Image 1 (cartoon, rainbow, N blue to C red):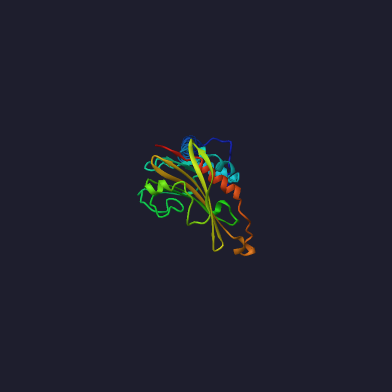
Image 2 (tube, rainbow, N blue to C red):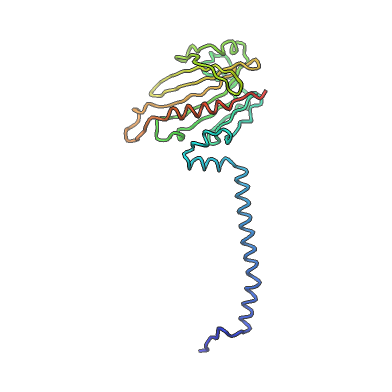
Length: 246
């Protein structure tokens, strides 16, 4: 058997060297293009979805900073007819009443007077996991009905204890705040209603916190009471972004 001489230049060694010299640059060029494409896609994706990065960072830090910083939230821009804007965390479900269909649920205890519920936001139970927190709902409604305007600052008559407790200025808007509490079948509903009259309409910015009686669940679930201060602070911060646009 012939012995291979590694240090000897042959015609096939020249051919292999030539092939490597020609092919390697193309391989490096292809890899560079693929890397540039991937990096560009990632940058474009982060630019198009800036809240995805914020939410991931918030999740790693327990969500505390993100939910305290309305500057990073989504702003609802579908309510030109309602004449207002409001901001909210992007991971909460929202619904706009594009059809502007009148209903009597535009605010709590509207006494059958119709209005429009322009906006609905829902905070899911996952926001306070392993607790008796069920959900929280925030709505923005308004009515230009004469009866609605006349009753705007009156206490309710059919939804349990409901009374004006204080006033507050939100972005230059003077609100009267009403509180209501209700219970049924082991569930509790605490509602805070911010009301004001603007441009001939009664506006109600309300949030209801829904919780359940822990004793209704097996002890094996290991539930503990939800952080009421955390939820109230979040909802008040959302209300604090409300402003009129016309």
